[in-house]
Length: 181
Image 1: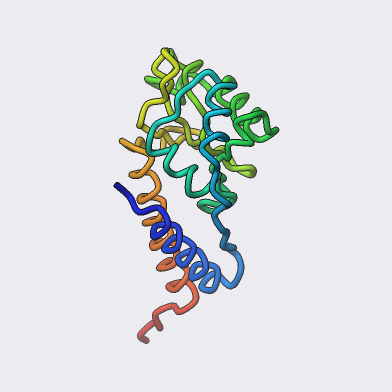
Image 2: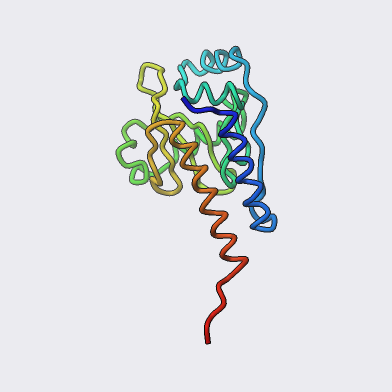
């Protein structure tokens, strides 16, 4: 089982380092206050779903995360209860091209948004198994299928690794290797 508080602190530290290396171009963010179990249960009742256990555990430690990765936000229980950005994410799913959705095109109505970018086409989705139970798999789309993660935890750890790569990128950009003449 993932230790969410440790993971949050590591990710915030990486985000702050990335902000320093990018000289503010890539700002850091912070996780939110935790959701109460009742908030999760209320959101599940309104949506007629049962969230994946790892996603529930995440929400019990951070009720969403604005700026989780670049400008991708992870939704909070309040978002699930009817925020504009959650509604926008659901609308984006209905408007996605069948070719982009690929194998998920026939189950478009069963795709459940858990995060999105406000300035690009990035969407993080999970799949409702038609009985109201959200499956563990997380799917990342951005004008095409970017990646499929076996679990919410795997998605979180992978995005954390992207921050390491972004730090390396900014370091290389800020400190180019001198050319030998």
